[in-house]
Image (cartoon, rainbow, N blue to C red):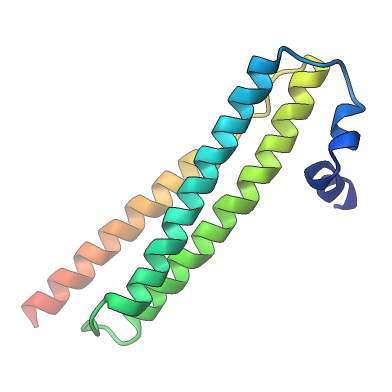
Length: 128
């Protein structure tokens, strides 16, 4: 675990492995990292908005559950972003295959299931 954290925060550690890659690959990796951070920030903003602006919903504490879920998901995306960036940069420097990730699929399914749950909650509220 300490090695993982060190890879995140110590640029000298990351640059000490392998050879210097074509800078375009490192910049592409950084752009992907920034896109993931924007996704995490959007989820966090959605969680804050849900906590502040959603009216009380028919199911007890549903508004709070939505807010907490979005906040936690946003934090997980941000942490996953830095980990994936560091692992990808290391693989690029070593000329290895890029690390595979199931995280995008898990994130997409989580958001889809969350949206479906909200639709069901709203329908239940409309019918009662």
